[in-house]
Image (cartoon, helix red, strand yellow):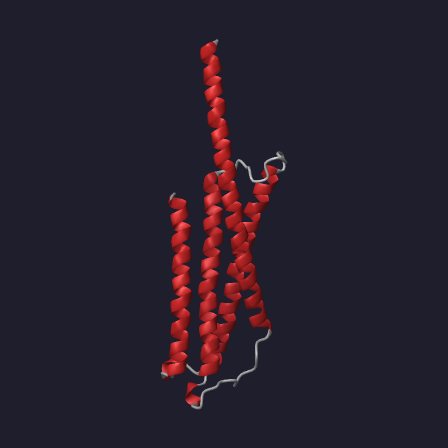
Amino acid sequence: MADSDIETSSNHNSNSNTSRSTASTTSVHVTALDGIVSANSLFTVAVFVGISFDQPRNLSLTDRSECNAGLDVERDLVLFEVISFAFFLFSSLVAQGIKLSINLLNSKETDEVFKANINSDVLRFGVVGAAGGCILGCVFLLLSIVDVIQLRLGLLSCGNALTIHTVLALVVLVSSALSVYIFTVFYSFRK
């Protein structure tokens, strides 16, 4: 009888340790998903405002008419903004869906707000999907901003120093930030 009591007690202790680990892990995932949704909301608003306040042509600040961007750059701008908007919306909806499933699983236990028994593979796939949508949204937003720069400062192919330096600064800063973000997402799932 004493052996079975010890076995039950050790099983109970391992279950409570697993429960604590699941609770803290789920809490971290919910916080990460909140961050994704918040960032995507800001980007989505920025893209939507950019699409809404699209201005007419010939607002270029360049003196050379051959350096003015054409209709192809304007079309690309709208295309990249719409694709960016779609990726940010996708990412936000995936993150909100995961948060909703965690909250629904938690509704049975009102004492433990961040405790949920959720398949870790599904959780990882969802978080990576939400992060991937955010990354792709940033890439297309970057491309649309490059088109805005070309519309305002002249085509990159003309070799205008201001256009090249502006695009270079934008690409270096955004790609550096995206590299850090991608590294941290993949690093967090290796642990």
